[in-house]
Image (cartoon, rainbow, N blue to C red; front, side, top):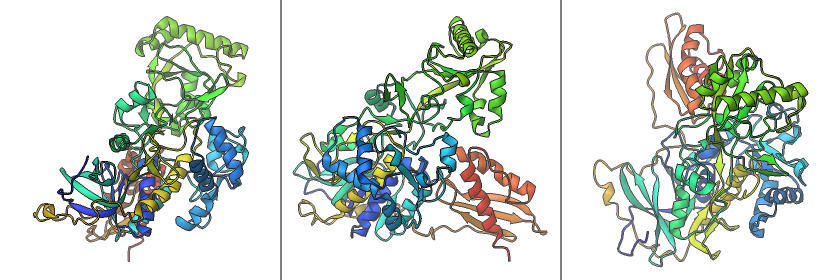
Length: 612
């Protein structure tokens, strides 16, 4: 969208960052550190920002020896072309990640998984090596860093977000404010700002020095999933606000796209997750031995097996005929098991949601009818599996003999309808080593930059932790380069008109939606009431109000503020009642919502510490 010399801007900043996830937060922080006044906008409402960084495992790629990581990185690429200068930035960035944690994230002692072979993460996955592909050159030395001894708790995201809040004098944040267009100067190519929709009104915002696209992938754009990945639908595991906006914006600016068919999945088996309605996040992480061993197998749409169930996917990639690749996608996959396996699965707290989706029938034929499968086909599949178990040889897919156990013919039998998942797409506009987005002729589009999963540098096999490393590496580069003063901005001397600010209703329209200390938020308390806070949940901050009776027993616990994930809602609903019932914050956590549970308990503990 071209804006003319006669047009006026509604506000002016040095840098505009589109997207407030890990890459956007990093870019904003480093732009501000280089003297820029920064606007960060995100399409998500407050409490839902963070992109996929918030939902990721918080593990960041690291390999101390750059020569070894270069071998490993090139093995992951498997011959796919990559800009040599960009590859050098990736390799040096990953090998310097421990120093990055210490210098820029204030993490005194980064937790290095390769130095802790008995850590809970590797134990959960039954892994001896940290790398997804330890057999590749350089793979044995590859590791993952976390900001503390813990994963999947939003710890990294909270640090990145706080770095932005600490710079609130220089960084303005707008939630629920999607970018609609990039603004070009009269030369038809220089990016001079962005058109932002805020509170129902569209504003033209000037960026004197640069715009950074950090909007994430297109996991929640059903049409793009079909058009680019060639599958009918996938269930998202990450942010619900990654809808491919950056791809459309970059195309409008003349960018060329790369890696559009690549994505990494997650989930159990060949990336199975429990079915969810369109627009809802799926619950992943079901790769426990209980679902890969014994009298249990998976079937495709027609009721036949189509892969080896005891072979775990590697960050969404599966082995077939000598290659690792994205899995065969089935529209209606199911998991089938018998009564003895059902009893075993019910004992696994982590599989509570999985079991809750199960369909039960007295016979295999009846089960087939309930799940819309040809009864004869499913009966034959069970019969074949039982024969394989008896002979301890899976003639179809070569499961390990000890993983096979025949179905109990007495019944009942169970099926769980599944979906296939996507954690992150890797496609987006092409960039160079300076994080500049380029056009089809490999020429930089003036003043336009990129960081994060949008146009990720992982264009073949995916190694866990790589996208978070990419966010940190290229978020810094994009922020710094976008902040550098430009001499070629055709609107550098135009002052914005602020007529939109003059009306009473819009007087505060351009104020930041957040601050460093949340000082604008006040929560009242009366007699025997105490306010408590915690930052260890999955969201930003949990604030509770605890009411005591005259004997100082806990009478009520109110959650005043929270931004937990959907899977934390059980803790929000149940724990306050349990704390009142037991008159103690020391209650059991809710399965599947451990971090949210701990956050509520710590907030209540904090409130009680204020008793005189």
